[in-house]
Amino acid sequence: MKIIAPLLVASTAAFSTGPRSFASHKSTLSMLPTNKNNNKDESFYPFPTKSANPESTSSLLNAKPPKSNEEVSDGSSDLRQLLGVKGASTETDIWKIRLQLTKPVTWIPLAWGVMCGAAASGNYHWIWNPFDPNDRNVMLGLEDTAKGFVAMILAAPFLTGYTQTINDWYDRDIDAINEPNRPIPSGAISEGEVQFQIWFLLLGSQAIAYGLDVWAGHDFPTVLALSIFGSFIAYIYSAPPLKLKQNGWAGSFALGCSYISLPWWCGQAVFGELDRPIYFILPVLYSIAGLGIAIVNDFKSVEGDREMGLNSLPVAFGIDGASYLCAGSITLTQLGVAAYLYSIGEPTYAAILLGLLLPQIYFQATLLIPDPVGNDVKYQAQSQPFFVFGILATAICLGHHDFVA
Image (cartoon, rainbow, N blue to C red; front, side):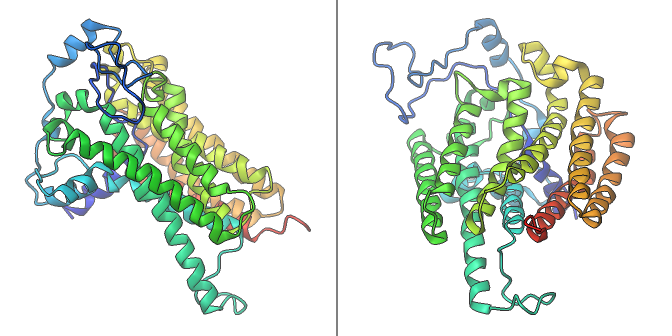
């Protein structure tokens, strides 16, 4: 349990906005041509990466690395290294380092989202469905299983891996202060190798997405369009000049959409059609709830954000105000979804959703509101399972509902 428990808790960090980066970036990553006209600033052309506040950069460079970055001694350091979480062991195997950069612990919500989208399509077939004698076509079930697996590979290792790798690239200077054992600031992987990984994951994801469109028989490459859009969001989330992660509202909602809406739409597009507004509305509502989850991860860095002038939501509204905003966004969106399910004649699923919401409200009242900073991880670990099963229940309801009747 000493090994497993912290890793289960760490999976909640999928909604983390990650470390903030303010130091000057001297990039040689050639995703775009570098600025040849300025030899003093090897910035990522056309996006300048030099800090506008030299004093802030200086104060960051004088900061001391936190002890939380040290290798743990409970026997889980090797597993932590493979999953890309803090307390990892030092590794020299390049393939293990490449895997660490993609942070596999953050793949879980994406794979879950694809599964929810497949369920919402109403067209996913089991290999042998024990509950439905009409859904026991083994060959069709095997094909759908393969489609679902490939869609999860697209969403998790490739697109999430791309997102995490490019985020680490743009955070390499601040990681050198806060997490010096990370692969890039420690020098365990070269800049050229990081560049190759970014391009491989980016182009590979587009190829897989197009292959899924062909496999699904799409006239319009819906999965490819979603993949391109998701890659763009991932880039502007981490890279200047937009760098959405530095803005509380934009960064938190971008995370919610990336981890809930986009994988849902991907899974549903592979097995069905995104031909009703509700297929967009409900995932976006859940993404607003995901914004609340992202706020929880901002509580632990509120002091540093305030000192650096970052407008995270706990800084903008205060810790107490942000805790109520967090609880409200999570609770009200799910109440809205439950009300919709009831309105379309699905009271059973509405009741299930309310039943899954009650424990979340309890943990908000006993953990989140009283001490959001001290209880952030504990709250996430106890509350989030009910939230994600609520998403799945909603998706199953949509997949079984007869919208024509």
